[in-house]
Length: 156
Image (cartoon, rainbow, N blue to C red; front, side, top):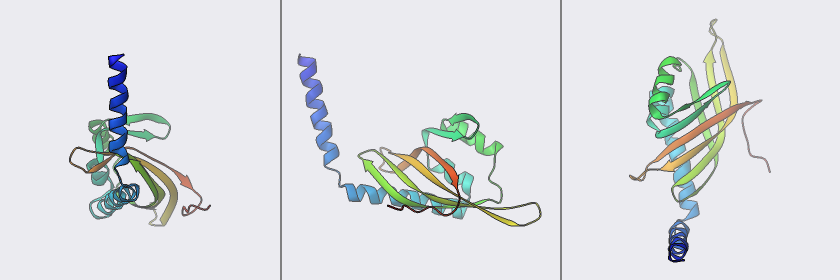
């Protein structure tokens, strides 16, 4: 019984800590982390940004293959599958969070050049799951997306 009472008390304490978080401020933090992530991908390249913003325990789903698990494995995957001349930009449309976990959802645009030099643009949507680190910075633990037939909007 003493264990149960301690457990219930702990849950209430944790719940009150989480409730102390301003939802709109947390939402803006997540949106800004996602925007900063995109800015780094634009300035320094896709590979560098995806490695920098990845949590140590990141999981990267890979279409048709087993997921890449862990930051070291992600680094190896990027070495074997470099982005090259691809240009990836994205824009978060929604974010929600609760204390140390959150997600962002949005649309992306991937620009590539064919062997003949023709520009090709692909569109899609994505979701990133974020974890707040002890230093207060957000790092993604899962990031995945899929193609769409055009730019992504959230219609109600």
